[in-house]
Picture 1 (cartoon, rainbow, N blue to C red):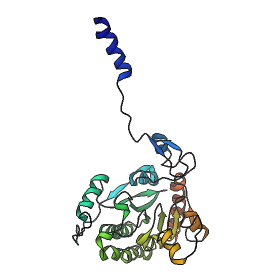
Picture 2 (cartoon, rainbow, N blue to C red; picture 1 turned 180 degrees about the vertical axis):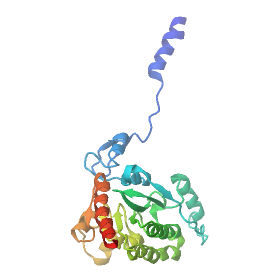
Picture 3 (cartoon, rainbow, N blue to C red; picture 1 turned 90 degrees about the horizontal axis):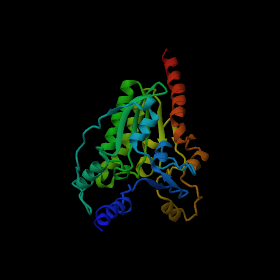
Picture 4 (cartoon, helix red, strand yellow; picture 1 turned 90 degrees about the vertical axis):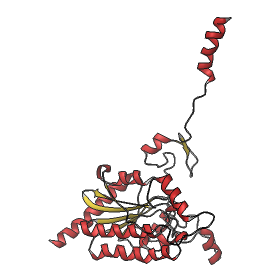
Length: 289
Protein backbone atom coordinates (compact mmCIF):
# COMPACT_ATOMS: atom_id res chain seq x y z
CA UNK A 1 0.00 0.00 0.00
CA UNK A 2 2.85 2.40 0.84
CA UNK A 3 4.36 1.70 -2.55
CA UNK A 4 1.05 2.66 -4.18
CA UNK A 5 0.65 5.86 -2.15
CA UNK A 6 4.27 6.92 -2.16
CA UNK A 7 5.17 6.20 -5.77
CA UNK A 8 2.34 5.35 -8.15
CA UNK A 9 -0.19 8.04 -7.19
CA UNK A 10 2.32 10.94 -7.12
CA UNK A 11 3.62 9.73 -10.45
CA UNK A 12 0.13 9.79 -11.99
CA UNK A 13 -0.55 13.25 -10.54
CA UNK A 14 2.68 14.56 -12.04
CA UNK A 15 1.65 13.28 -15.46
CA UNK A 16 -2.01 14.29 -15.63
CA UNK A 17 -2.91 16.25 -12.53
CA UNK A 18 -0.94 19.45 -13.05
CA UNK A 19 -2.33 21.95 -15.54
CA UNK A 20 0.19 24.01 -17.44
CA UNK A 21 -0.59 27.66 -17.94
CA UNK A 22 -1.18 28.59 -21.57
CA UNK A 23 -0.53 32.24 -22.56
CA UNK A 24 -3.63 34.19 -23.61
CA UNK A 25 -1.98 35.64 -26.72
CA UNK A 26 -1.01 32.42 -28.51
CA UNK A 27 -3.94 32.73 -30.92
CA UNK A 28 -5.72 35.72 -32.40
CA UNK A 29 -8.97 35.88 -34.36
CA UNK A 30 -8.95 37.81 -37.62
CA UNK A 31 -11.55 40.62 -37.37
CA UNK A 32 -12.37 40.18 -41.06
CA UNK A 33 -12.68 36.44 -41.78
CA UNK A 34 -12.66 35.27 -38.12
CA UNK A 35 -9.94 32.75 -38.94
CA UNK A 36 -7.65 31.74 -36.08
CA UNK A 37 -4.09 33.04 -36.38
CA UNK A 38 -1.12 31.59 -34.51
CA UNK A 39 0.88 34.46 -33.02
CA UNK A 40 4.26 33.47 -34.49
CA UNK A 41 2.84 32.97 -37.98
CA UNK A 42 1.04 36.30 -37.70
CA UNK A 43 4.24 38.09 -36.69
CA UNK A 44 6.17 36.46 -39.52
CA UNK A 45 3.50 37.74 -41.92
CA UNK A 46 3.79 41.33 -40.63
CA UNK A 47 0.43 41.17 -38.82
CA UNK A 48 -1.44 40.35 -42.03
CA UNK A 49 -4.03 37.56 -41.94
CA UNK A 50 -2.72 34.60 -43.93
CA UNK A 51 -6.30 33.44 -44.61
CA UNK A 52 -7.87 36.57 -46.14
CA UNK A 53 -4.99 39.12 -46.36
CA UNK A 54 -6.68 41.49 -43.89
CA UNK A 55 -4.12 43.97 -42.53
CA UNK A 56 -4.31 44.03 -38.73
CA UNK A 57 -2.81 46.92 -36.80
CA UNK A 58 0.91 46.69 -36.20
CA UNK A 59 3.12 48.26 -33.53
CA UNK A 60 5.21 51.30 -34.43
CA UNK A 61 8.42 49.40 -33.62
CA UNK A 62 7.56 46.56 -36.03
CA UNK A 63 6.46 49.03 -38.69
CA UNK A 64 9.68 51.02 -38.53
CA UNK A 65 11.77 47.84 -38.68
CA UNK A 66 9.80 46.80 -41.75
CA UNK A 67 10.21 50.14 -43.52
CA UNK A 68 13.82 51.18 -42.89
CA UNK A 69 16.73 49.53 -44.70
CA UNK A 70 17.86 46.50 -42.69
CA UNK A 71 15.38 47.44 -39.96
CA UNK A 72 17.94 49.97 -38.70
CA UNK A 73 16.99 53.49 -37.66
CA UNK A 74 17.78 56.23 -35.16
CA UNK A 75 15.06 57.52 -32.87
CA UNK A 76 14.53 61.26 -32.57
CA UNK A 77 13.57 62.51 -29.10
CA UNK A 78 10.17 64.19 -28.85
CA UNK A 79 10.26 67.86 -27.81
CA UNK A 80 9.04 68.71 -24.32
CA UNK A 81 5.62 70.36 -24.04
CA UNK A 82 3.44 71.59 -21.18
CA UNK A 83 1.96 68.61 -19.30
CA UNK A 84 -1.84 68.95 -19.00
CA UNK A 85 -1.90 72.76 -19.47
CA UNK A 86 -5.69 72.99 -18.99
CA UNK A 87 -5.77 70.75 -15.88
CA UNK A 88 -8.58 68.92 -17.66
CA UNK A 89 -10.74 66.37 -15.89
CA UNK A 90 -13.73 64.33 -17.07
CA UNK A 91 -14.31 60.99 -15.34
CA UNK A 92 -10.58 60.91 -14.83
CA UNK A 93 -7.80 63.49 -14.76
CA UNK A 94 -6.09 64.01 -18.11
CA UNK A 95 -2.73 63.83 -16.35
CA UNK A 96 -3.65 60.36 -15.06
CA UNK A 97 -4.75 59.26 -18.54
CA UNK A 98 -1.40 60.36 -19.92
CA UNK A 99 0.51 58.50 -17.22
CA UNK A 100 -1.54 55.34 -17.81
CA UNK A 101 -0.92 55.51 -21.57
CA UNK A 102 2.79 56.10 -21.04
CA UNK A 103 2.96 53.16 -18.64
CA UNK A 104 1.12 50.78 -21.00
CA UNK A 105 2.97 51.72 -24.19
CA UNK A 106 6.36 52.82 -22.90
CA UNK A 107 6.04 55.92 -25.08
CA UNK A 108 6.12 59.61 -24.24
CA UNK A 109 3.10 60.38 -26.44
CA UNK A 110 1.19 59.13 -29.48
CA UNK A 111 3.98 59.75 -31.99
CA UNK A 112 7.39 58.22 -32.62
CA UNK A 113 10.05 60.00 -34.69
CA UNK A 114 12.87 58.15 -36.42
CA UNK A 115 15.38 58.66 -39.22
CA UNK A 116 17.35 56.35 -41.43
CA UNK A 117 17.32 55.25 -45.06
CA UNK A 118 14.82 53.55 -47.37
CA UNK A 119 16.27 52.28 -50.63
CA UNK A 120 19.44 54.16 -49.75
CA UNK A 121 17.61 57.51 -49.55
CA UNK A 122 17.56 59.56 -46.35
CA UNK A 123 14.17 59.64 -44.66
CA UNK A 124 12.56 61.04 -41.51
CA UNK A 125 9.43 59.17 -40.37
CA UNK A 126 6.75 60.46 -38.00
CA UNK A 127 4.56 57.50 -37.02
CA UNK A 128 1.42 57.47 -34.86
CA UNK A 129 0.77 54.84 -32.21
CA UNK A 130 -2.99 54.20 -32.04
CA UNK A 131 -2.66 52.38 -28.72
CA UNK A 132 -1.65 55.69 -27.08
CA UNK A 133 -5.02 57.36 -26.42
CA UNK A 134 -6.32 56.40 -29.85
CA UNK A 135 -3.43 58.15 -31.58
CA UNK A 136 -5.08 61.48 -30.76
CA UNK A 137 -3.27 64.66 -31.79
CA UNK A 138 -2.42 67.06 -28.99
CA UNK A 139 0.37 69.56 -28.37
CA UNK A 140 3.05 66.87 -28.13
CA UNK A 141 2.08 65.35 -31.49
CA UNK A 142 1.93 68.76 -33.17
CA UNK A 143 5.34 69.64 -31.79
CA UNK A 144 6.67 66.28 -32.96
CA UNK A 145 5.51 66.92 -36.53
CA UNK A 146 7.25 70.31 -36.49
CA UNK A 147 10.41 68.60 -35.18
CA UNK A 148 10.22 65.92 -37.90
CA UNK A 149 9.88 68.58 -40.62
CA UNK A 150 12.84 70.53 -39.23
CA UNK A 151 14.97 67.37 -39.13
CA UNK A 152 14.04 66.52 -42.71
CA UNK A 153 15.01 69.98 -43.96
CA UNK A 154 18.25 69.95 -41.95
CA UNK A 155 19.27 66.50 -43.25
CA UNK A 156 17.91 67.11 -46.78
CA UNK A 157 15.75 64.04 -46.26
CA UNK A 158 12.27 63.05 -47.36
CA UNK A 159 9.51 63.24 -44.76
CA UNK A 160 7.05 60.37 -44.32
CA UNK A 161 4.13 60.62 -41.92
CA UNK A 162 2.12 57.56 -40.90
CA UNK A 163 -1.19 58.60 -39.33
CA UNK A 164 -3.25 56.16 -37.26
CA UNK A 165 -5.54 58.39 -35.27
CA UNK A 166 -9.05 59.10 -34.10
CA UNK A 167 -8.44 62.84 -34.47
CA UNK A 168 -7.74 65.76 -32.15
CA UNK A 169 -7.25 65.13 -28.43
CA UNK A 170 -10.36 66.53 -26.76
CA UNK A 171 -8.68 66.85 -23.35
CA UNK A 172 -6.53 69.68 -24.75
CA UNK A 173 -9.41 71.65 -26.26
CA UNK A 174 -8.36 74.50 -28.54
CA UNK A 175 -4.69 73.63 -28.04
CA UNK A 176 -5.25 70.37 -29.91
CA UNK A 177 -7.15 72.08 -32.75
CA UNK A 178 -4.29 74.55 -33.22
CA UNK A 179 -2.08 71.60 -34.16
CA UNK A 180 -4.03 71.19 -37.41
CA UNK A 181 -2.75 74.41 -39.06
CA UNK A 182 0.62 74.04 -37.30
CA UNK A 183 1.15 70.60 -38.80
CA UNK A 184 0.27 71.87 -42.28
CA UNK A 185 2.71 74.77 -41.94
CA UNK A 186 5.38 72.29 -40.78
CA UNK A 187 5.08 70.01 -43.81
CA UNK A 188 5.04 73.05 -46.10
CA UNK A 189 8.58 73.74 -44.84
CA UNK A 190 9.60 70.40 -46.35
CA UNK A 191 7.88 71.18 -49.64
CA UNK A 192 9.49 74.65 -49.77
CA UNK A 193 12.87 72.93 -49.43
CA UNK A 194 11.97 70.86 -52.55
CA UNK A 195 11.97 67.64 -50.53
CA UNK A 196 9.37 64.86 -50.91
CA UNK A 197 6.53 64.63 -48.41
CA UNK A 198 4.85 61.22 -48.47
CA UNK A 199 1.86 60.10 -46.39
CA UNK A 200 1.14 56.45 -45.58
CA UNK A 201 -2.51 56.30 -44.52
CA UNK A 202 -3.22 53.45 -42.10
CA UNK A 203 -6.21 52.24 -40.11
CA UNK A 204 -7.76 54.47 -38.89
CA UNK A 205 -7.01 57.95 -40.23
CA UNK A 206 -9.91 60.12 -39.10
CA UNK A 207 -10.96 63.42 -37.54
CA UNK A 208 -8.62 66.40 -37.34
CA UNK A 209 -5.64 64.37 -38.52
CA UNK A 210 -7.38 63.53 -41.80
CA UNK A 211 -8.35 67.20 -42.15
CA UNK A 212 -4.80 68.50 -41.84
CA UNK A 213 -1.29 67.23 -42.65
CA UNK A 214 -2.48 63.73 -43.62
CA UNK A 215 -4.15 65.00 -46.79
CA UNK A 216 -1.53 67.40 -48.17
CA UNK A 217 1.20 64.94 -49.15
CA UNK A 218 2.95 64.94 -52.51
CA UNK A 219 2.09 61.24 -52.69
CA UNK A 220 -0.53 59.34 -50.68
CA UNK A 221 -0.12 55.62 -50.07
CA UNK A 222 -2.57 53.55 -48.03
CA UNK A 223 -2.67 50.10 -46.49
CA UNK A 224 -5.43 47.78 -47.77
CA UNK A 225 -8.78 48.12 -46.02
CA UNK A 226 -7.80 51.16 -43.96
CA UNK A 227 -10.62 53.40 -42.73
CA UNK A 228 -9.90 56.94 -43.90
CA UNK A 229 -12.25 59.89 -43.45
CA UNK A 230 -13.26 62.85 -41.31
CA UNK A 231 -16.61 62.09 -39.66
CA UNK A 232 -18.05 58.67 -38.97
CA UNK A 233 -20.27 56.84 -41.43
CA UNK A 234 -23.43 57.13 -39.28
CA UNK A 235 -22.98 60.88 -38.79
CA UNK A 236 -22.59 61.44 -42.54
CA UNK A 237 -25.61 59.30 -43.42
CA UNK A 238 -27.79 61.17 -40.92
CA UNK A 239 -26.56 64.51 -42.28
CA UNK A 240 -26.95 63.86 -46.01
CA UNK A 241 -29.90 61.47 -45.51
CA UNK A 242 -28.47 58.95 -47.94
CA UNK A 243 -27.18 55.40 -47.65
CA UNK A 244 -23.46 55.31 -48.34
CA UNK A 245 -21.68 52.57 -50.34
CA UNK A 246 -20.44 49.57 -48.35
CA UNK A 247 -16.80 50.38 -49.13
CA UNK A 248 -17.18 54.09 -48.32
CA UNK A 249 -14.16 55.57 -46.47
CA UNK A 250 -11.92 52.61 -47.30
CA UNK A 251 -8.47 52.93 -48.86
CA UNK A 252 -9.71 51.23 -52.03
CA UNK A 253 -12.71 53.58 -52.36
CA UNK A 254 -10.46 56.63 -51.98
CA UNK A 255 -8.06 55.27 -54.57
CA UNK A 256 -10.93 54.80 -57.03
CA UNK A 257 -11.93 58.44 -56.43
CA UNK A 258 -8.45 59.91 -56.84
CA UNK A 259 -7.65 60.78 -53.22
CA UNK A 260 -5.17 57.93 -52.63
CA UNK A 261 -2.45 57.33 -55.22
CA UNK A 262 -1.63 53.71 -54.36
CA UNK A 263 -2.92 50.99 -52.05
CA UNK A 264 0.17 49.03 -51.02
CA UNK A 265 0.33 45.76 -49.13
CA UNK A 266 2.57 45.79 -46.08
CA UNK A 267 4.99 43.25 -47.53
CA UNK A 268 5.56 45.49 -50.58
CA UNK A 269 5.87 48.76 -48.67
CA UNK A 270 9.66 48.95 -48.34
CA UNK A 271 10.26 48.18 -52.01
CA UNK A 272 7.54 50.58 -53.20
CA UNK A 273 8.80 53.45 -51.06
CA UNK A 274 12.35 52.74 -52.20
CA UNK A 275 11.32 53.11 -55.85
CA UNK A 276 9.34 56.30 -55.21
CA UNK A 277 12.10 57.90 -53.17
CA UNK A 278 14.71 56.88 -55.72
CA UNK A 279 12.79 58.65 -58.46
CA UNK A 280 12.01 61.79 -56.44
CA UNK A 281 15.34 62.23 -54.67
CA UNK A 282 17.46 61.45 -57.75
CA UNK A 283 15.40 63.90 -59.78
CA UNK A 284 16.01 66.54 -57.13
CA UNK A 285 19.76 65.80 -57.12
CA UNK A 286 19.95 66.15 -60.92
CA UNK A 287 18.16 69.51 -60.79
CA UNK A 288 20.56 70.75 -58.11
CA UNK A 289 23.51 69.70 -60.27
